[in-house]
Image (cartoon, rainbow, N blue to C red; front, side, top):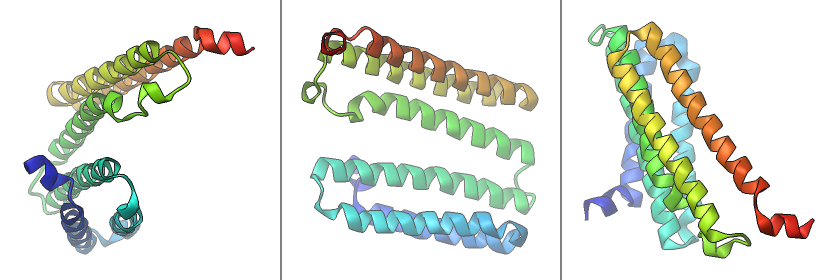
Length: 195
């Protein structure tokens, strides 16, 4: 049941309200960055509009959208909480940067785990399902491992090295995924027969 709690419309509404409150608090603490706080409030409103739009879609799709909106809300809330703590000198700037880096890494790892399961079913495509599934699993693994590496780099490396190391981990994941996609397209026997 807890998984369904995060996939509910109510959880997204509460998360959106929480984002608005944190954004307003950050706006009071740092009014010079008002455009950033206003942008996050607009994102929260956009999430509520999306909730209204997806009411008539397939229940599994609606659940995935709710989970995605909730996860995005949690991520942004954590970043806003660290920003607020930094503005009141409760959290040092270095800790805030590390937390943001670790959070991005964990999001990448979760996305890598979720990606192969969230795509169009391979049986619904006009291609070799085994090859597509293999490529999607590869991209999922690469993204998940890059996310873990990204988070580990931000936990253990000095901040200047973490900036470079995490960028390299992200680029490596991107180019590996791009290579897998190019390989899949270039070696697709069905595509060559059409030409």
